[in-house]
Image (tube, rainbow, N blue to C red; front, side, top):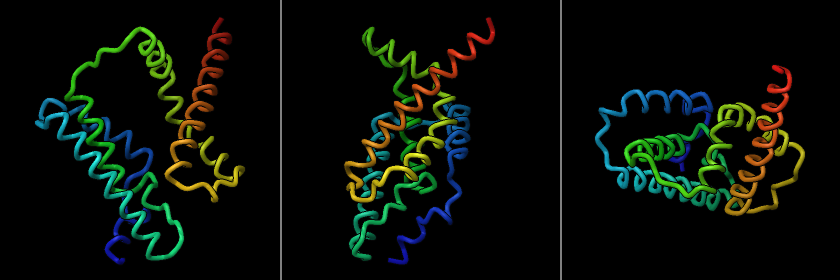
Amino acid sequence: MKFLDKFNIKRCPWSALGYFIMGYIVNHFRGRIRMRHRLCYGLSVGFMVITIMATYLYSLNLDKHVDRFLQYRNVLIGASATMEFIGVLQNGTPKFRAKAKKVIKVISKHSFTIYLAHILFLDIFKKEVPIWEIPSIIGIPVIAIIVFLITLLFASILNRIDRKSKG
């Protein structure tokens, strides 16, 4: 299992700031990237499958659940996110229904605040809520949705306070 240790978060340079920089770099070179969006999405799914399998095999080997492969700094998570971002850029502007456009507009309006603040709520959630009994396959999506909604509410409140203070 020493091979799997290469994906340890302490050895990989990815961090939350890394994702921001990755997005900037990919967007800057978007005209030079020649990959079909389906290939990008396929690679993204492939990287996630490898991540899930690595988590499973490592946990099986240690006979306890270890979720360190699912952390921000995992190179496979970073590669998957990069492929998703490239896929979205290569796919062009998607067409959405009116209700979806409203939701996307609200999320987009607060995206930077969500990006900056979500880690605060995630850390609070991890410290205050005993989640260790929840299997990762259920817990990660549920926690992601809860943290996202709380952070979106927080960003919305900050925006209202900012608008009121400006008059």
